[in-house]
Length: 184
Image (cartoon, rainbow, N blue to C red):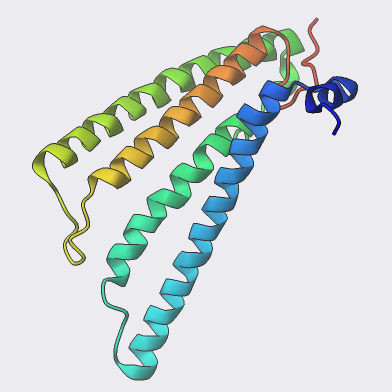
């Protein structure tokens, strides 16, 4: 059986980046897609039941409202790692590549701090949900597992943003091992 680290070395890739970056990102992407498909099925059953049989799916609104943050927070680390979020680059052609590199570093650093604060607030919300035993209105599901999962996924996104800031600082394109940001 061939050694996987030798295979990565031959391809010029970092195995740590693969196992801590690509694999979790793709796994969370698959989970996010599965949740989106589940939400679509629940909505279809609810609307079909409502209009065809005058009997909507019980607690469909509550289930969908719990799935939506799952979709968002599962996709968030992937989007942050790949820098796939919406950006406006109307004036980027006016600045040099080195200024763009430092701009990318500062934006990634600020985003890391903002996402870290959101992680902290979600964790505080998890503690409150756990302490007071808050549950959903119809299904009486405890809320703390959902807020804990959102906090953990937000923390992963924070680490991804920090990795992007480091990549800009070391003149490497975030989200990729084989590209470098040109400097002038």
